[in-house]
Image (cartoon, rainbow, N blue to C red):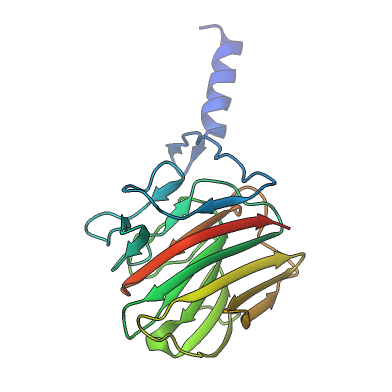
Length: 219
């Protein structure tokens, strides 16, 4: 190989390597259209709109009786394989069948991350309704245990009751509601946005959750 081509090849290899590994390019997920995205789960399998990071050892995301169900996912999210608009409204219905509540989603993450050990730092904002034994409602930036999270005493999740969740970002403000009552809100002057911060996911620790009627609307 001529020296000039060899140098180009070495430079290309170096630029494509991180921590001694050659990075694989990942296909770009399609964007949510201006008309929005909906899913009522009236089928038997997840389909190609969702990316499942769980295995049998870390809980199972599945569709049962026209709804999405999960238990014991241990921070292995179910990512929507669509990119979010910068400002967005996300709505869904959910009920927890467990006394610990712990309704959880991630907004503006990388679309692929999952826990590799007990401690999990997200790539997203994390919204938790009835977390920590149904004691806290939380909106966290990346680390749900971080000192910079917004928290309040939980209004508490009633097992078996269906709630209408809504999460919005407008500018620097992210707000979550339950049944049209504000749950938590955060102003982030350095917002998570752009590539790597443009996906939505449902997440779960150990609660048994039933999720339905997802609607995502660009703002």
